[in-house]
Length: 78
Image (cartoon, rainbow, N blue to C red; front, side):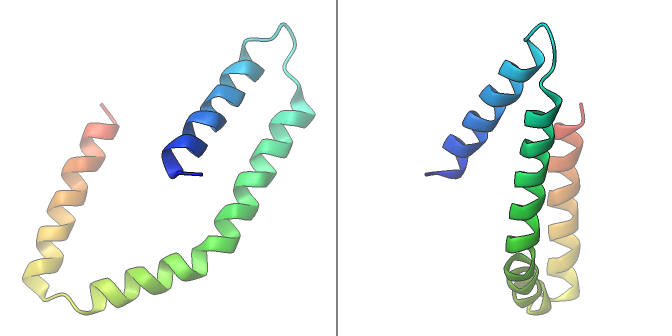
């Protein structure tokens, strides 16, 4: 499944949980555990790929990357 489809499915699950009269805490914890496991499984490959990418950048390119990421982050936090 695509990343977008997975994100949409997880959001739907979260909305379902928080709109019930009583929060299913065990289901919420299971969702947290699933996400944590996924992050732990994918982190080494992600970090390796990020290192391979950034290690090849010049100082100027790294600054440009930092600027772009900062702009994106500021949009997310508005």
